Image (cartoon, rainbow, N blue to C red):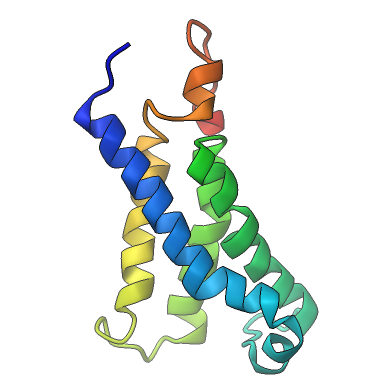
Length: 137
């Protein structure tokens, strides 16, 4: 089956957005866990370990299925939650210019939430000819 330019664009968006999130936010938190515990903001007073663990889940684990195109929409939700918490609760004083990276990531992952993974995805490969719930795509 031929793929459209939209399929190529969604593949590029999925992979590039996830790699940016992993490289800039996720992997530094994971690789410097002890140090990050001393500097992470805890706006809901959950404690440093749970807060950092939730951030690592969203920024390290969730990008992996998105890049593969499996449960893309579902995996976008924790990422969007972390981005919104950062923008609304942790850094409400940021101007658009100061928070531009977070806003751009928000745009990328909301787009993927709306559009799904596109044709180049494992969920598309497994669901050919079968009905699949939208949240699993």
